[in-house]
Image (cartoon, rainbow, N blue to C red; front, side, top):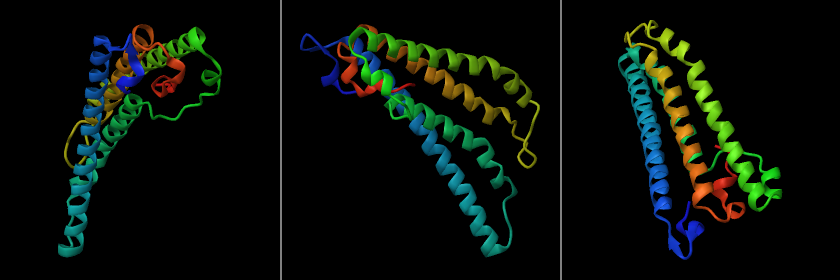
Length: 185
């Protein structure tokens, strides 16, 4: 989002500033999760490779680190794409509509994505509860730590949908020219 896209009466709307900052903080949180996950996975696997080829020994738990952190890396990437509006989308229909029809369709799309996010979290609750009883063999870490990334991703996507709907309703007066609102997440 750029401030030049969302000016009302030549002034920046305070609601825009709030929503924009919330989206930036969500994006930063997701970026932190992605960078941390990649770094820890790389360091654990790289140190295991070094030990294996120099001392002919390996760290058994290093193979379990990706099973916990890879889902977090993916979840962070999903949230980053949604926050930045850089996810994969087909915009043929939305590009053909203008004005109120375009706004209505964008709100409808964000509502559907929000409902899907909530549904995934509700239906995933059983899996999450079952994962409490599953442990990784070497470290003994519960699988719930990996599965909880689902809730991280979909709860933040839901929040982003709400923020985008608020922006469409109360801030953005020219949604058809805004890249932010051609994103479907």
